[in-house]
Image 1 (cartoon, rainbow, N blue to C red):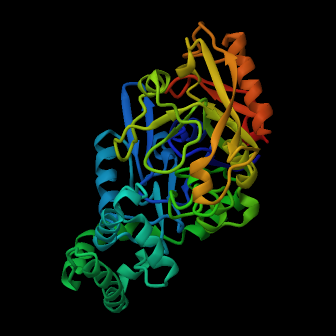
Image 2: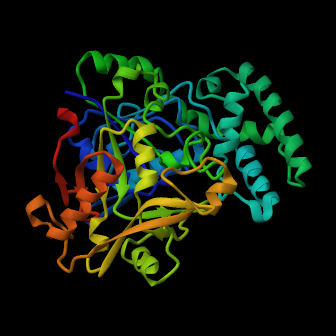
Length: 429
């Protein structure tokens, strides 16, 4: 028996929510280990649609959900989300949801600074959600973060708020934005503390007990490898590491607990926000992919940019992310296309290259090299076995495996949780 870690291998929005929900039926505990409420997972269960940002997807399956120390938590956003899913019939209590006592909090001052900075960037904006995730991570590494455990110590909280305001008000004033008072932040925390603290616990200790008891743990990543702060398209990235290695440090377990690493990839490519996108399509095909795939950001509502599958970027994500196998999603969106292309390399300043450069200028100049394949007229939507797939769709999947140097172990053919083809159960690896 193995634990499983799920990460995105593109720019997020690959359908991780559905895959995690599907895998959660085999797990006992589902753990979020990085990111904030800038992440978004949409789960379709019959007629019910759940949109989750902070809550682990396993809660929909009635599993224990964990928010690890690697997550930055907006307490108000979390409580709004809990109230929303509770109204939809889910049970969220301190018994079913554990939140790391050492997780940093996102305060109103973080969101204000995030938005003020983005406005000041003008044409060079990064495309953040403006929700304060970056500034909250900055506070964490600068050792001035307010953590959940601080809420139980008023004296600690008092001097920590002084330090937070000294830093952030200076920046806000310099950007011409409104500043905050200590009383405002205290009022914000006083309102939320009674609801938040009951969920707080020593997550690392409980997870170790679960591991020793042989319970299956599913680690759920947010965003994707190409948004990783080290390995992504910097600076157009998120503010945390998104690779599987962080599942350990972001939840308080040892690296041997990560288990089978399942990378999620769409059968094409999408991106929300700014930044390079070599295989992006600006034509009718790109619009078709967006319309068929309902490509709008779960959190932002922004339309996603769409393009052909980029095998170069996914291969890189598999290598740095330690991917054991791929879950390929939204194959059905390609149904009926006369021709399908895969990005197999790039051209940079007249030279052919086989990997994506790190420098922003070079990233903006790369041009895709496409390999084309015939499409298929038959439908893949709703297929639940390999035998139900058109021959050309199978050839497409096999070609992707060759190019990314990783096996496709699951195949998703619609948003419905059971429309999934399993070639290899990650929990049995």
